[in-house]
Image 1 (spheres, rainbow, N blue to C red):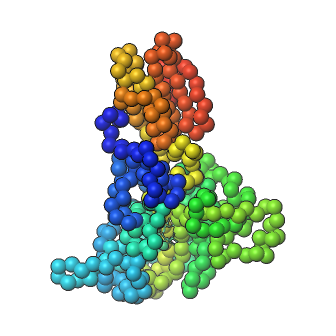
Image 2: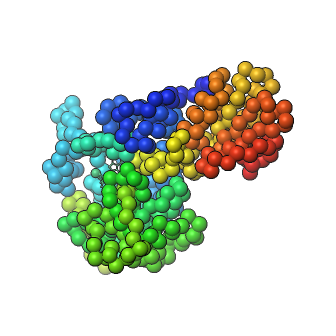
Image 3: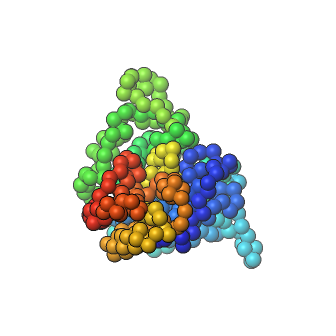
Length: 437
Ligand code: ATP
Ligand code: MG
């Protein structure tokens, strides 16, 4: 993509309405545009990142045998009357009436809808376990939408649901999801710490929030320092095996947020305790038969006896992660995208767009990179070098390939790594080899 043609309305000034760095940087880099409070349009660069995150989430869900569906955003109120949540949900739910005076709503979550879908066709123990997910926009009329996409009113969520014959099988589904979450976040360059969460009136120990550390996080967290160093993406994991030992590896170490914190345990940890602020980027929950009972999700077991299925739900804040990753990865000059989610791999900078020789060299590199399947943003605009460097640092692509007339006279271009700031002069051929290798 050529910058001269790209729809990327960057801002020079820091927008005054943005309180936190990710919101400021997303607006300055031209990734999003606010439509109304907590509701945003995603511009090309922002959408690229959102799609990359979505794709990692999708791949890791598919890897555990979770099947993708797509349910509508608009749901009939009757479903929620059946579960009893229509009245409970309160003003966060956006309620709509259609032309025939039927009560509808914009889904804040999908337990009712998916349970009804399961119940309509699944009949026996042979139909379970089932893991289903979708990646769909949600609406919650948050009392205080803020921090840009981090707490929006309309936001993109991956929500998955498990259906099992009994509690033991439900635990296996839960564990699969738990371990898959560890991998999902790590692939995005994040350290996400699972924290036991309050399960409310249902009780039990089967609810975890996944938090990433950031000064601007809304939750106060405390955990054993070892949880910050665990690495998962490279481990070969057989998801059909018993995953309890892996889950125990995490849940046996102290980690807590808000009302779950325990002063006694924290004192005992001494120097091993880390306290910080965190952003919730996922939440998994086992809730038994809460919805299956109300919506008739029943299957027959091996003896022909009817059993109400055991369920869990598993959310990831896909659009929140765009902001979350920036909170975790930026410096004073702008965003530093992890390779796996970056909108482009390389930013190619033409330092003298009016100069025939420089432009020919840039066009050549651009063509070769694209031919090799590398995603490039090519700054082919006329303008000051300083401004181009600042823009490129701001949008945070992993690599910058800088081409100017002086370097070319000596047969070199410059390659800069955004994260480390390291610069290297090398021949155009070596630069290509490094970027396509
Ligand atoms: P929170 O406590 O932050 O309001 P929640 O407990 O309401 O979150 P869930 O219902 O578990 O969230 O939703 C699953 C995930 O969706 C959350 O972990 C979070 O990452 C994301 N999420 C929830 N609300 C919002 C929002 N208003 N804007 C963006 N993402 C959100
Ligand atoms: Mg909420």
